[in-house]
Length: 340
Image 1 (tube, one colour):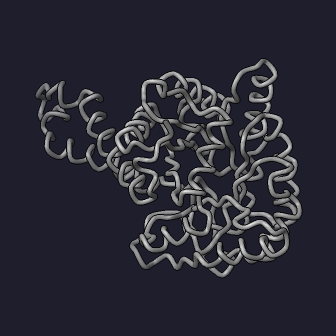
Image 2 (image 1 turned 30 degrees about the horizontal axis):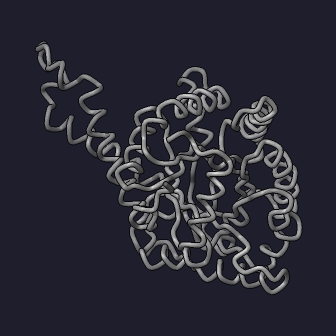
């Protein structure tokens, strides 16, 4: 199937919310990890979201080029071609963009999509994230309002973050403290400034103890009721139940009970990165350890070309990551729910 159109993407998210499941949003950094994500979604019979971060976009442009827009455009065009061979709907998304990188990442990509739309084409990406977690709420929402207007013109969806996610991702660091929990007043202010759809479609990553990185179950102190309280506060004021479409960040170490509870409160997208990175790398290590004297030319020997051919370990890496994507789709109940 082709990359999801704006209408298909909107329908995907609407179905997830109404039917009680969420889509894994898989971070990728290369053509190989993209194929792993696409393969995983196809094997799970799940539509899904593939996303790149600022660091991922830089990497995709070339280690010596480091241009986020170049990497993003190249990635999106490549994805548009290869995704057509997989029997699922895929949306392309740009992940965490802080204030100091907006002008070199999200804003120019929105302009590219506006130009494409003006020519009767689909937008380059289907959604973009503005990460305002490092600035005060009012500045966060002021920037979000400006980006939402541009996003609407580009026929894309905006993702925002209200609150602070702990840990670190692509240089964005959040302390692990009480700031990790968004308040109902924060949610009300968000609805007041950004509206509830009339100014443009946006998803909201409210924070309820989320922490980026790799942690054992029990370390992360999640409070999914934060999402429930936010939805109820907005419903009481505006008369709309579950008005927000939520995004779950920093989910490593979360229990199945916490994930399912969050979905029940309106989570439609859950970012998966740390776990799929490991699932990709672990089979490579296994290949190298088992073929040590083949991947290295030890003591002047010639090695084994079949062992050090990048395709040899690339194939097992793809399979390992794809299996983790299937698992994510099963946990979030999107498996078997692809749109016809």
